[in-house]
Length: 545
Image 1 (cartoon, helix red, strand yellow):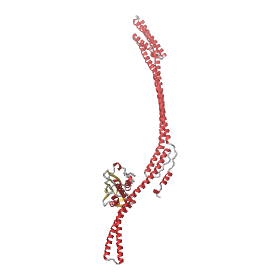
Image 2: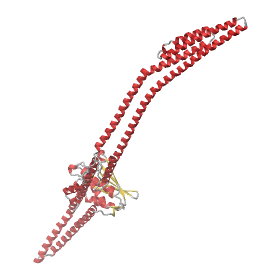
Image 3: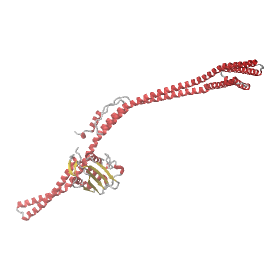
């Protein structure tokens, strides 16, 4: 039993038995949701930690502004005032001008009791003691100045020398006393600098610790996100990308004509569903291909049916004349036979019979010759269209035979046909394919090219294209094809006259015959109201398949 004869129910049952049940793999949806939730939680945790640490850093900054900054500022001011105090003290010790010393001492006194030293009682006491020492040193300097004046006013050299020596000793005592206090003040200034540096370093250390903690958390979060991303990519590649590539490859093989495509069980239920759908699609495509093949064969049978109708109509006339003439001859023969048996046959009767027999015989012979030629022509075209014979044949006469086989259908449609082809053009290939496509083009023009009752003309023009190519132009002067439909006319099952019995496979078969059987190309030149021309180019020597 052929595939076409297998009942549809049996095919469906066989297809169902060939399908494997769905594998119960892990579901990919919950995994994706869980991974997405983990990423969102990680990102949320990162933002929460960053927000908390930012708040902590803001608190550190506020604390530095409200508490630490004033401490640093007052110590810096104290250090500056202490340096000024030491400069005034140096002026008091080094200057020999009493007025200048008094001015410097007054300035030092103002600094000694300045509020800037009140934040530290020990510092305030030390500065007060330093001022007392400076005042004592100033007193010693005043006393030394009086001794120098006495030395100038002394009468005897001995008294002058003694006065100058006392002045020198007093100056040295004042300088030594201030130097001792200056050492203590330098130590205090160093302590203030250390306090400022310690407070600043403490704030910076707190900010740095917070920043390092935030950086560590962010780094750990990014590492976790990268790990999740890597795991997601790996899972996607294994459970999504690879199965999708397998499904795409299976679809390509189905499109290329492969049969019984099977895919392995997928690791996830979703992809396994897709795999099984692809396998079911394979069965559906096989069914569609079988149906299309049946429709193509039916279309060919329709063309052959039209050919048979044409044969019957064309042969009917000469055979009818021959039958009528032979009947007349039989009647005349019976009459002559009865006259001969009755002994009444005359010479005139016999001569009349001979004339009638000669005329009838000639008529019968002429009509039978005509019928024989039609049968031979139709037989060749029919055999070519029904077979896959590869041979060398003259192109012009063969095209005329094909169009002659369609003459009855063309006359009924009110169409005339003409063939223009070089007499010496022979081609090697498949005449059946050429006859089939020419028949389909003619049927297409009759069905779609003209309004009912409209007359027209079909033209087949053939010319050489170089030494290796042949160009065949099939034209009609009908209604033409709209531009938006010209790109679709070769699609299978596309038709604008489905209600009139068109299957939409005629031009699709033409396209396949030209491109596959004749190894050529086909194009359309058409405009609404200006007719349609199909331009077919194929090699003069079509290779045997």
